[in-house]
Length: 520
Image (tube, rainbow, N blue to C red):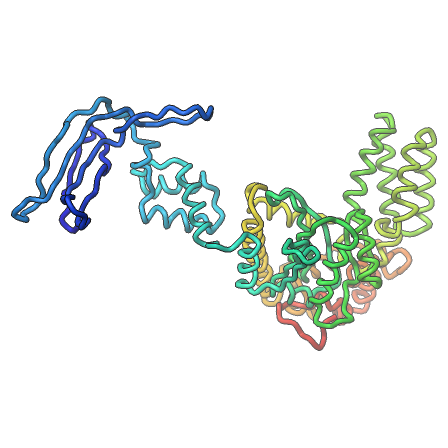
């Protein structure tokens, strides 16, 4: 076997394949021999399948026979037929033999596949690294499929998903349909996400997204916000349906992530999903459920275009925004009256605004009510929308299975966690130029730079507000837990640096280590 004949054929001929390989078979009346033929040898078989099938066979008669020499000195070559009935193409791209991936190329494909690099970019990378490579993109897809089958082995897709989740140390639960093996819902959370949830539990944002997998199953994500105002994913869930019962199961598992069983988010921000809102009311009765201002304003804008003439649309949209941003109930009543007067001829629009949004939900999105709520600046679901956008960028398409989707989620989460870890030392060690003043001396290294930026911005109102609490409105104090303009005015007037204890504890957490004694 070590001394097989080495036959080189010039490119003007054709590629050889082994037609017969009888070496040391041990069978009676069969001698050791090798028979080489052209890869275009054989007959083209006619089929009536109707498919666009093709064959490279053209009956090429080229044939070489090789047998071991009797004296053991080598091999005897006998050219049975030395001519081809065809020529060679000018280029070899797309040839099934020449385009095969080498061992090193396969490893390169495997490495890039692990990083979710699209096949077209993998092919370009191969051609840059190995200029002689003439593989086509179909070879990349085929080898990716081989890699996935080797990794998964005999396990089903769902079992492979659970294995990956367990290997990564995730906290997860699942439930099945009745007594069957069909999985209904899956809930999973990264261990570091659980830590962050217990450190920053005040505000959670929840929403569903679609088109992340080939099953068209919606993905439910729960996110939070750190003291450095970065977004972190708390948990993900795949649900059989978007019913109250399914949401209740997911929120029940969310409650189990809290170290202290009496701990719950103060604010939960969602869209106007009635099933989810009902589940929040059941599972987190002490939490305040706010609604996304962005989507409400968008829906009202669409309804305005349907009912109001073009000349008044801009005016009515402006009046609506003044209603939404009203700072107190008196101003809310005044702005609503102006809106109703402007829409006296558009009952369809004003009835929609009143019946769908203001009457049942004004306390969930109008400034007069939510300015009293510690929402830390979260009045829209844009954080979770941004998180979904990044996830879909990493996924590349929506035709992957659950395993591919989880790998993208996990990689995206790892990148986020790296940014969050890096943000804490920056606030701990670095002082921005705007914060050098002794006025902020008590806060350096103890409060996040994001909080300090908001305080600096609020300080610009002191010249107008002074120490008058009524003029101030104290929105920064009630909504962010930070000293508002009238407080800052009193400290500045007395020449007192801002005390550390007037900053909410949320902004003073600059670590990912959970303090179980002081978790709030």
